[in-house]
Amino acid sequence: MSAPFISFEDADKLLDWGALTDALVHGHSLPKAEIADTFLYRKPDTMLSRAAWIDGLGQAVKTATVFPENTKRDLPKIHGAVSLFSDLTGQLDAMIDFHLVTKWKTAGDSLLAAKRLARPDSKAILLVGSGTVAGNMAAAYRSHWPDADITVWSRTPENGEAFAQAQKTAFNPDLSDAVSQADIICTATMSTEPVIKGGWLKEGQHLDLIGAYRPDMREVDDVALQRARLFVDSRETTLDHIGELKIPLSTGQITADQIVASFYEHDVFKRQTSSEITIAKNGGGAHLDLMTSRYILDAWRNG
Image (cartoon, rainbow, N blue to C red; front, side, top):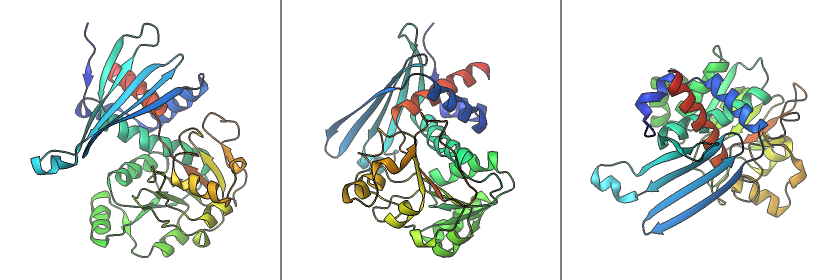
């Protein structure tokens, strides 16, 4: 029997945030993933492939093509798919829509961090950014904190207001004020300069940092990192690759031993006191794509 192609429309409605985070916990209980990334270029186009192999879960290759000039063709700039292979035989188990995997992997990663690090009694959530990722995070957070009040801030006020209306959240144009009122702060921007200042933070807050993915990108300043206990989903995909940590590590503003834990160190990936500030950096990684893809295939088969 040929392997299925699972589209966004086929599976999105079958998935559950809690079940996904359970799948991520299980994935991190298995032997540590082998991961590798490759980039191919034909100006101005790019093809990125991210591969992962986890003993007991299988193998996956997530490929994205980025064609900036597709906007002139009235087409999306990014296309892609995930090839998921059997752990037992190496046979192709499924092809899964790139956008489906990316949505659930990205938001599920930060939701898992927040479930472990944010105060259970958190009541106010701030989304910094008003794009697709922020919308997915609103849904993810609501699955665990259904009674929380969600506020959005956007660099472009009209986008923030539109987001607030569509997502049924509040909009606050004053970022420092919004930060001061939040229990959980989620950054999902494309910024290369910090948008969150450490001096704004208060005791007991948790921050999920999502947006930065290049060596030149940051969303919080050195003071924020110095005031917080620091966590990452994976040391291998963050410390030497993403500016959020790479830059302050290179300048000596923080040290590598200040990174308390990754998801693989689940026993210490937790809040110690109600007053401490915690920061979790979401670096993504092909191993998370593999864990998410396996969960999606299982949910699709059972759906």
